[in-house]
Amino acid sequence: MSTSALRSLWAEPRPADPPARGPWDWALVAVLLCWSVLEAVLGQDLAPRLLLLIAVVAVVAPLLWRRTHPLVAVAVAFGTLTVVDTVRIVTGPDGALLTSVSAVLILAYSLFRWGSGREAASGLGVILVWLAITLVANPASLVEAVAGYAFFLFAAALGAAIRYRAKIRIRDIDQAKAREREQLARELHDTVAHHVSGIAIQAQAGRAIAASHPERAVEALAVIEDAASRTLTELRAIVGVLRASQDTEYAPQPGVAEVEQLATDGQTRPCVEVTLSGELDDLSPAVGAAIYRLAQESITNARRHARHATQVTVAVTGDADRVRLTVDDDGSSGAGGRAQAGYGLVGMRERASLLGGTFHAGPVAERGWRVEAILPRTRGPR
Image (cartoon, rainbow, N blue to C red; front, side, top):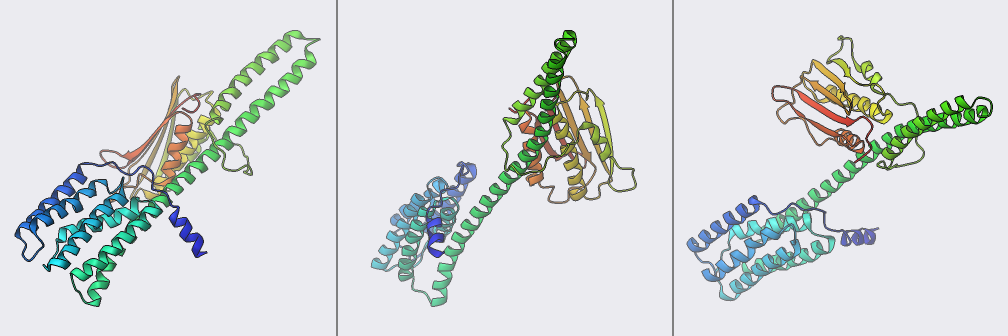
């Protein structure tokens, strides 16, 4: 078991898409450089100042590459500190640059946050070598030595913890998307199966009456053509759906007409009001089901997360090309604001995207929260 775990850690790849270098990175390096230079100039009983200034640049500058090349940054920084401490052991001056220690703590964190398993193991070896040498250069008690190791191990552990927390969150988001795709696939299955059954029945009827009543056979062909067009539209939507499993239950799915059933009588809080307007007939069944599910989830979220909410307003408006769903509540989000990265919102956004629509959720200017989705009437996924 332990051997398998070690192999898994060794084979761990780098996290995908690390943040790009930004203004804050340059600001951090500038502050640490200025502080370290000032410390080197004003400090007493330090190694030769020229050597320290070179060391400062070699230790602080790699912070700019701590996400893209974490092992190289650690090797340069800790290697430089190893050379400086070796010189201090030979020449005898005491003291160290505290700012440089701050920089290497950040590098130890970044090694385990952004490095691969091989890089983390190799970089940890470099760090341990430097710790051993710096304890010789700075004789300390056992407690101080343990505390020094603990600082760097804590930085490394923090980087690993945040790394795996982000990994778990990505996995949970993928699962939320998969669940939404699976549910949408079930709804599309029901729709396509219905159309195909109608095509089969009309084809059988047309063949039976073709000889005696050819005009009625032509009518049956027209019905078949219309049903086939609808089925083709739904099949194009299915192309964008990945099924997670094959053993799910199939049941009739609600549509826009059922959105009105989400309204309440005003006796419970928050009160839900539903308004349907515009052209809502002949919607794609997948779009109708999506409107219902989005409205249902938005109301559920308002009940769970909107503090002191008394009113939830659901408006569905249709025109010739698209359908718009707007859900507003008058609740307060609290000091920290309502989380915009919840898995429910991820699933809602995925559902709208699969049907070629757009989705947005966020606070409104005055008070409350708004969910808005715009879906094409018949268009398949983008």
